[in-house]
Length: 204
Image (cartoon, rainbow, N blue to C red; front, side):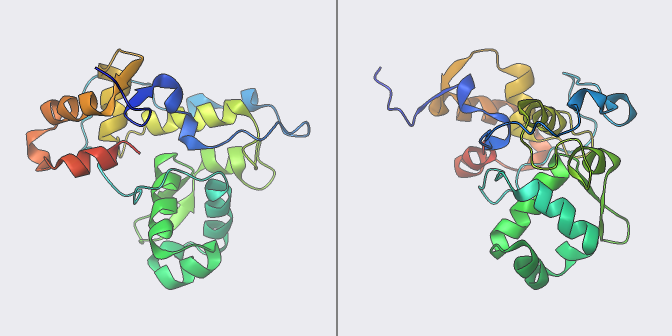
């Protein structure tokens, strides 16, 4: 059956965070020196013991400058995301993109919500892309894969779509029309989400 280019997806269509690699920084600290054992969970194939996360990115992929910007602004204003109007000015984006920046920064585990309702920079985020971090401008390919891995192994807010495709889908090439029924079959009954449009949005 003929496939349109937009309907055909391959493993190469899933780059780390959808960010473009612009080069490498010769002055950056080596990524290998990041102590992953201190704060990186082991990847497991079993179903997470916490509820899946289905939305929050507002259909935006993570933009190249968003994570460094989130680290910088949260460092200055921990309650940044509690004040949407202020966040729009500080981050230089619209309301929906503010929500998306928060989503991706939490999912990559460079910031974390605090009990006070504010946000803090994680040890991982500070060491990797904070001030004097190993790769503050995300110029190394290894940094992008590391962030990709942190999303895929997030222990507190596992993404349903990522979990299903990385752990339970084993074909390198597929069509979106094949993925939606697959997600529908594996959707937890307690989620209450069965809309095809919602499932399609989950794949961002």
